[in-house]
Length: 472
Ligand code: AMP
Ligand code: MG
Image 1 (cartoon, protein in one colour):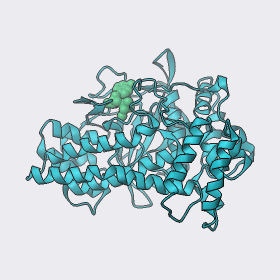
Image 2: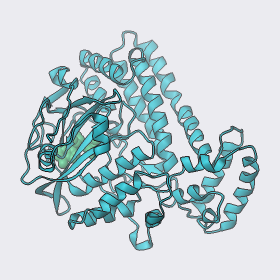
Image 3: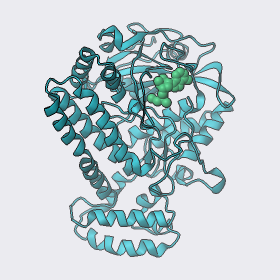
Image 4: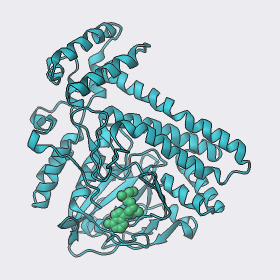
């Protein structure tokens, strides 16, 4: 069988200033680690033989119809504007329109230097490639919008990071790689024609009902408000919510030093580079609003009557915290088994979370077990749970089938950070069994799987991972 990707490229038709043509830089000895057949089916991709796929997904062979480009963008990194970022270690091979009618990008990440690489080597090592593969596919299984992983290959080359590491390339699939930073770069350069062109392109591709730049802003706000609430509901911490990592399509994108919380605490930070806690768990809603404000500022540059547009944009941005809160409440209601609404629900939920934080309760396991002794056992002082559960039981009297609601809202499995780290360590030694097992178990995140209870356990003291690294 020959690999066939039915490309239908649109970004490569945009003005030449939007990207740089760039073929992937070949690697020494590509070896296929994983190919995601379920995703391939959605994309309409026909798999080829293993060696052919290794060559293509390493960038050594270009599939027919590919028009490889590195995309231009800029962005705020930790609050400071960087006028030019762009794909420094990735190339977009092209787009396909899937069997579901959705247009998606197929991108190689770790495929060598581009004109946007600055000091970087354009490469990725095995650790972050496998981390992104596992975590992005887990996010998908959790029902959260995300980029996905089509393939991972080893390059047979060494990449220098903290030490010599095995090189790898990830094939990433996204509804698009348009970011807030894609708008910022043209706005900052006062390239109004490009900005208009990009706005029309983004609206047509993602939000065809949206009218004008402010319509796009509103649509991105709504998608991002939902996304952030979903992250919060599973204890996900993105780690680098820079504006270049903030997707216009509303997907989780650019998995770097991300992680899921074990013990619940609102101030949790994992990223080794986030020393001030800017991107801590509980800051994520505020940062999303800040990022949307940057998009608003950029979009306004193309408007004829800026005064009216500033007012409209301000209203759109100011409504975001309330929308995130609504989405948050909807998700957390479901997490405690509620389908009806009551004024006291928000206080009931935050009371539980406060008690969890004071009692070192595991976020995932507490919610999954609510109502049973297993939830109670999560609390250093189990009476703190009992007191809460009394009021909760009274509230549940108005619900028909809370257990079913909770089982669909509270995953049994998340990609726990220590398991991800152990998986990477094994892979570096040539053992990919933990990688494949994690993928298989996480694909059914909401099902109890008795043969995988070890993957529900929080880390022991010696297993705790205190910091995750960007792995760039
Ligand atoms: P990220 O941390 O993935 O959001 O990347 C931030 C910027 O750094 C983007 O422009 C990347 O393309 C660039 N970058 C990250 N790692 C590398 C690398 N190894 N080589 C070249 N550019 C890189
Ligand atoms: Mg990025």
